[in-house]
Amino acid sequence: MPVVREFTLPDLGEGLTGAEVVRWLVEVGEVIAVDQPVVEVETAKAVVEVPCPYGGVVTSLFGEPGEEVAVGAPLVTVAVSPGEGVRPLAAVPAAAGAELAAEVERPLVGYGVAEPARAGRRRRVGGGGPPVGPVAGPVAQAVPVPVPVPVAASAVVPVLAPVAVVTAGPGVPPVISPLVRRLAREQGVDLSTVGGSGPDGLIMRADVERAVAAKVAAPAVLPAAGRSAAPVVSPASGEGVVPLRGLRKAVAEKLSRSHREIPAATCWVDADATELMALRRQLNATPGPKVSVLALLARICTVALERFPELNSSVTEDGSGIIRHQAVHLGFAAQGDRGLVVPVVRDAQRLTTEQLGSELGRLTDSARAGTAAPAELSGGTFTLNNYGVFGVDGSTPILNHPEAAMLGVGRIVAKPWVHQGELAVREVTQLSFTFDHRVCDGGTAGGFLRFVADCVEQPGVLLRQL
Image (cartoon, rainbow, N blue to C red; front, side, top):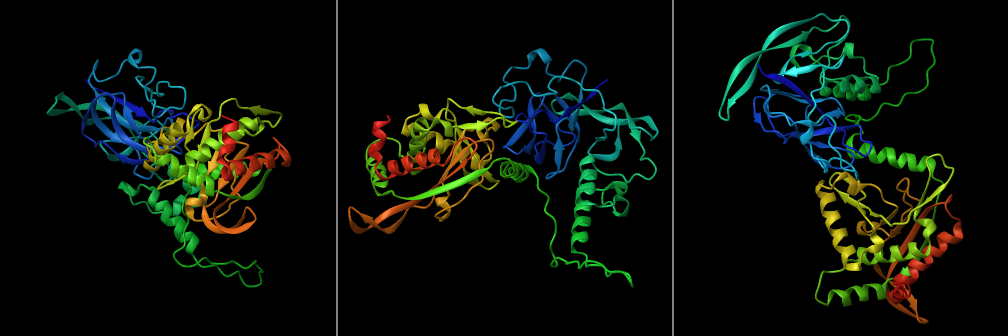
C-alpha cells in the first residue's frame, strides 16, 4: 500500500522564516521524480525553485499564488510506493539546495525525512475537500480516500489510503490556513462576520482582504446623541490596505531597524569627474571588456577603505564593540522589478578593475532577474549607491544595516565649473557619504570623502595606492 509523504517548506537559510508562493510547477495527480522542482517561491532574498525529495503522485498542493507559507508548513503531499520514490537520508549531498541555503551549504530541512503530522496542522488531499489532520476538540475519524499511485510511467490506479477527516469545532470559523487567520487578526477583522468563498464556506485570503478594504473604505460612523467624539477622516473611495510581504516587507523591516538603531550622519561634496570619464573612454578604446563608471567607483572605494579601514566595519549586536572587517564585501544598490536589492561583490579588494566590472554586471543581471542566490544578496561590509541613474544629484540614504558606511554618487552632468582659474563646462557629480557616527568622527568621514573626490577628479592619485 502506498504511503502519503508530506513535504514541508525547508529552512531557506539567512534567517528567513517563510516564502511566498509564486507559481506551482506541478499539478495534483501528476507523477513526479525525486528532486523534481515542484514550486517557485519568493523569499526576501530571491525567487527560487524548491525541489521535492519524494517521487510519486502529487496528492495535494498547499498555498495559492501570492500566499505566504511558513518554514515547516506543508507544501505538497506525495503518494509513494513502499521502498520507492524517497531519497535516502544518507544520499543527500552536502551541497543540496545551495541555491536556497546561505553561505554555508547544507541539506534542506525535511529532505529525506518523513515527518509525523503535527497537532493543529490541516491537510488537503486531492486539491480540495475538507481540512484534515489531528486537532484538539473536533472528532476525527479515519475514512478511505482514493489516492492515485503510479504503476508505470504512463498509468495510475486508484488505491484507498486512510486519512483522518476533521469537522470544524463549534464557534470557530473555517479558514484556508493559519496565515489567513493571522492576517485577519492583524487587520482587526472578525472572521465570524466574513463570508467564505471557498468550498463549504471556507474563508480564503481574498475574503479577508476584501473585508479589510471594505473596512478602510467605510464612511465614518456618527457618534450617538449626547456623546462627543474625535473627528474621523474617511479615506477616499477606492483606497485599501496593501499587505507588506516578500521583498518589500524585508526591506521595510531592515530600513526601520537601521533608522532606529544607527546614529547616521551625511556629508557631501561636488567633484569634477571630467578626467575620470576621459579615463573610462581611454580604457574602453583598447581591446578587452568594457569598463563601467560603477567599476571605476568600486575600485576607488576599495582603495579608500584601505586608507580608512575603520569605515569597513559594523557595531556588535549589543552595541558594546566595533567589528573591523578585513575583507571588503562591496554591496551595490540595484533596482529591479521586485524592488531594491543589494548584491554583494565578495573580496572586492582582490579584484582588478576589469574583474570588478564583470562581477558587477553578472550580479546586476541576476538580481534584476530574481535569480541571485541568497548568499549573493547579503553579508556586505560597505555599500556603493549610484542613484545618479535615476537622474538625481543628491541623497541622504539609510544605511544598509549592520554596515557602517555608504557612498552615494549622483548623476554626472555638464555644469559651469572653475577649472584652472577659468570658467569652463565640466562633467560634475555630487558625492554623498553616510556613516555610523559610532564608528568614527566627522574628521575620518570627511577624510574618506575628500580622498574619493580627489580620485574622481584626478584618477592618477590611485596609482599611489596600487
